[in-house]
Length: 111
Length: 115
Image (cartoon, rainbow over all chains, first blue to last red; front, side, top):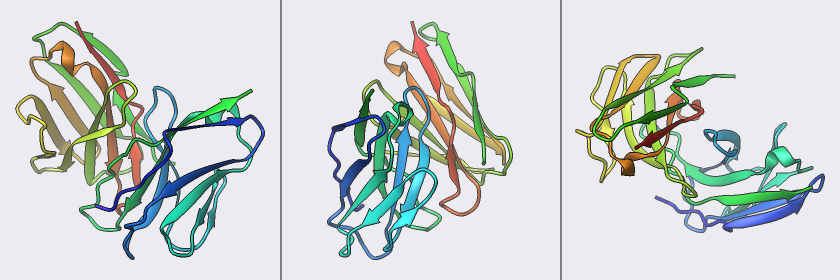
């Protein structure tokens, strides 16, 4: 399985943008880049996903490098509620696909 | 959006007893359900995958006789931790897949404490 590498932790000030990086140098052509986050004492929740083009939704933006070997999750204006562990995961759209979580990035938001 | 519930949200049991955790998809039919375990400060670890009406497929290193999974309907899966021991204390999270692989949603988790 293609692996992702993320920083263990990051810090950001409230109300400022946050850029969470993810490296996936062994990504294959059929791998989609997914981001999930887990708030404290809760189950994970879907954030965003993409294949090649940058993506935006109400929660975040996903910027994907041209060679697809890295991507960045962008929270445009972090709030205290965004403090969570963020997971970057590669997934293939087939029936046998399973979500395997790495260590993720623990994001701390400073008030 | 799609909702997955778990019951109970937390449970304390004595060592040697069994405990059952329920996972329900509230507003969709789940063809596949997944069970994860998470120890403090660690990531989620996939335990098993179950399809409705079939036996669960367990990940390597997970004891199938200890963690019994039943997926009897398209909206309910249960995980029974048999003869629980303190080392089974963990946060158990289920996930339900609706149809396509990307329609997958997570429950809120069940915290199990074995004394």
